[in-house]
Length: 326
Image (cartoon, rainbow, N blue to C red):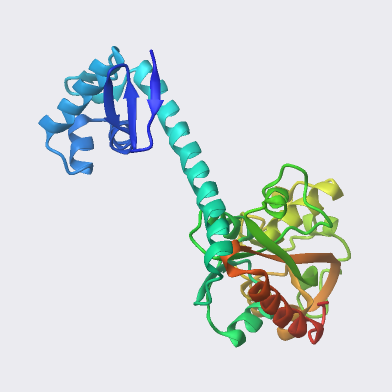
């Protein structure tokens, strides 16, 4: 059977053409609702219309796609479930290809018509120095996100730039961080180096001197959210120390910024968490340094090298005047 994905958003099966997105949406709805009537309601279709679409699909494929049982709803047949999975995989791959080619086209157009000088949108992993510098500059709308989420936003074209870090001198080969640094459709700059460590209650009452101490003595840890660069770094440090993060009390307790972690410790609701020296000093907490990392900005090509360099310079100037930064 010959199958073609066409540029007009249709899928050609044998001698029939089916709308790609509506077909996938129909399969999604039946798989999740467990009934044809529920799927029709979810898609704002009549029952007759939804049933008719499945009849067209089954005629094109020559195989039953759904199975209806009286009193038990509607499910995808084994063939239908496999087709649904394959169609979903193809859809995600197409989106990635289109997003990549959009960025390539954007880069070519920049060379032809010049750079865009309007307001920018950035998704950035939390850093107080970087945020203060960008807010002082103006012209940039900011969203706080974990490093992984920030990168997914810029890769998908939902924002103009992303701020990220990964707590190592170089990213692991094949990781999303390595891919971003090598992506020719993005402009990437290291903008600051910062120290990270364990922020501790005043006086370090549990005498914490290493990561391994966190598994003993009932110490209450507060973590960063999944996908945050600090969380990724902390998990790496745990692995290097030979401990399982889940053996640490409070490992599942998550906050979205260094300030929120520090505030919990300062209030007595937690005993230790990972963050920067500057935040620990702001909340008058004890601090145990664990290492330095580089923070990067990646922007879409149309932002231009000149504008990116100006942004990076503003961040670096503020970093130079802040304890724990370089």
